[in-house]
Length: 101
Image (cartoon, rainbow, N blue to C red; front, top):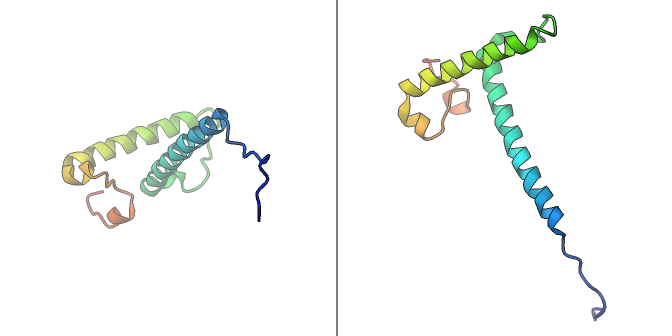
């Protein structure tokens, strides 16, 4: 089977690679946010169901939950420095039975 000499393969343009890099970064950030939301839902039962407060109070409630989550995570890091260095945070499958949480 002979290939046509006039057949030219188009290489992706620079925008294509920029778009792929952007999509990769966006996907990485989305995964991180989903993990954090999973840990927050696991820790605070308040957001297992829809928040039934006025829409103007929801951002304040969510900010308070995030601050409490960060405080709990900081305390956990102080109590478990070796695990924290490895990036093993509570809420992952390895720590689901951790009694310190």
